[in-house]
Length: 195
Length: 208
Image (cartoon, rainbow over all chains, first blue to last red; front, side):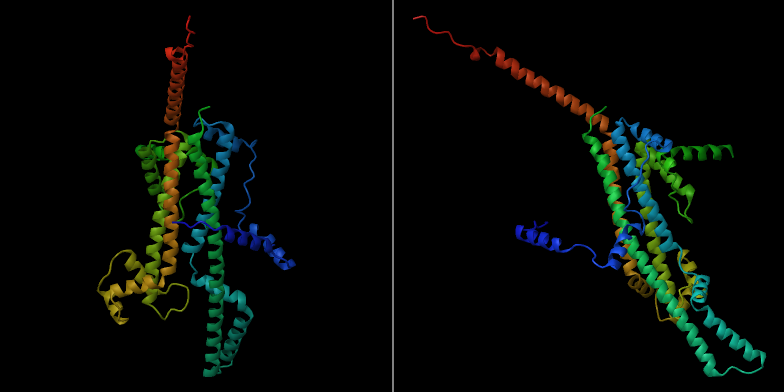
């Protein structure tokens, strides 16, 4: 059972909503301005009805005895849904199938700490070249440093995974919306009479 | 050879024209294209889709089922990955170690043997406790995947209802036209009754 919001509560909500006027600082405004560009799914599809591809799609949709206006409307919704679905497939591939490989980790660590790793390697090579044994203290230091580098990379990798998960949740909302709109438009055909 | 070509042609023909125009492949790398096509052909045939929009909707219905199966497979893979991780706790890297790869191979093939049981004993685990541990580790991922399955099920129900609307549209239109005709006839009957009812005739004034 859903409870209806009381009048008092609704008025309070409206008053509170008036207080929220979006980001105020220039940094906040700049960040929120690029919100829609994160995945471009909130940007509506630009449909050129003179494009032969689009025209043939509208004709295909209209084959079910629909008028051109309804067919165009449905075609737009189909394209929106397909766009969202394609993005979901891409995300699924990125999230679940492409797991971090050994080489990816090695490359990542090298990209971040290339100079330090080279310094350690040069030191080890130099000591070997001079036939001097590397002290246990140095060995431990090098190992610990490399472990820390790997840990840092893994932490950053996890953070980026978290960001991707956030993006996935946002894109899911767009997929839900586009599928609902398509289903709604299709169900509305029931009320339309034959041309 | 000839038969194969014919069957592949018939598979191609089943893909909706609308999808062909959009040109999006629904099969991800590592999935069987032929399996997808077979299922799609069966769905389109079972639903009896004829027009491009009907075929497109049938395709979307099957696609929802395909996605649900994909998520189920992913759930299984997540559990197996965590089972493998539990059997090699020394591997701190994200990359899969040799032991993990072997464990995953055994579990994916359902080929648990004595060697596997020995490895379990080494870690003081049984197959059940290992599964339980993996479930606990992958709870959030499984919840997420379950939510996705639920969403697909909802979309599937929506597409099924839409398909029925589309198929029954002509029948509905005919039914509405018949209902209109019936209402017109009834209204006409009332009008006639009003005009011809003797009780409604104006009474003549008495002569006296």
